[in-house]
Image (cartoon, rainbow, N blue to C red):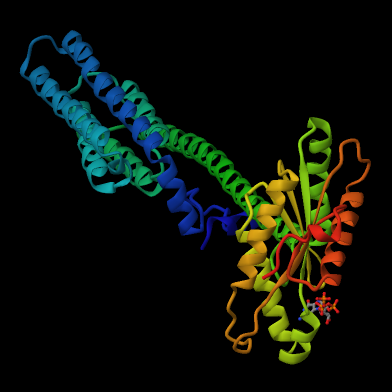
Length: 408
Ligand SMILES: Nc1nc2c(ncn2[C@@H]2O[C@H](COP(=O)(O)OP(=O)(O)OP(=O)(O)O)[C@@H](O)[C@H]2O)c(=O)[nH]1
């Protein structure tokens, strides 16, 4: 099961031991609480050892130096040392706090020590009943996550006390009933308190687990939405065939560069690039080959540009490029290089001796020009002048037709 299932509430319900019915959730709870439980148990063991030893002083006052005192001190020492040894073991290996064997051994020693001390002790029955009742409560309150064992230890303590009391000084029927009632009441109080604390703690834990699961799901949903958003943004801005920016996205990016160029007074060159006689190629080789040529020319153009240059598909077999910081001379040089590169492309599906070529129209954004479209229009006019002149050339806008720069 996953911890998330518990948010439904079903797995978070508790059994008679006040443990989660869902064993995986219970295991997770124990793992989470292990260090805290270990610490709590260590404190409990130190307290038990200390109190047991402190009562040695009361024994001395009651018994004076005697063999009985020696036996009692010996019992107290054994109990205290075994408690301290277990506390040390748990300090080194916190997982021992949840293992029954060392705990049961030490608690058996401690409870047996308490019962034996009653046999050797001259105090009144009332004193012993109260010490057994307090010990009973201590077992409920100081031992974490072990209700069946807690009940067993308390059974041993209460039953042992009745037996020891019978051996030590047979109780009158009235005292016997009173003792049983007091011990039963102490156990009832202890159990109820234990149950209340455990239920509260586990309920809080189940809520925390459910909350974490909700957060995890939310986080996953956010990540999926972010991914989807990024995919949608990419789809909305990219030409699906060539993978370069579509016309709309090109304008977004180029407008930004246009404003920067106008603001800072830096040059911005525009290319219009058109594949020559593309219709013939399409008609001759088919649309699929035409698509492949478009993709190849687009990536060829993109590979010739700097990162700051912007390339987009203007429409059909026409591409548009914006080159920030490029004056006309630089732009013409780059356009020539691009034209040469396309001419040198060799595509296996084209006939022997058949070369691709492009015509490039170039313009430059004029200072104080109001709109980018004006520069685009000039580049387009230059492109059509190049087409009219026979294609496969670079034409600079506004210059005489003799400014056709080169031909392959
Ligand atoms: N395969 C393919 N063809 C396209 C696509 N978009 C436009 N075309 C074709 O591109 C061709 C453009 O032809 P024209 O505008 O006549 O130009 P051209 O044949 O290149 O001639 P010039 O530009 O004068 O050199 C048309 O046949 C369109 O159908 C496309 O996405 N894929």
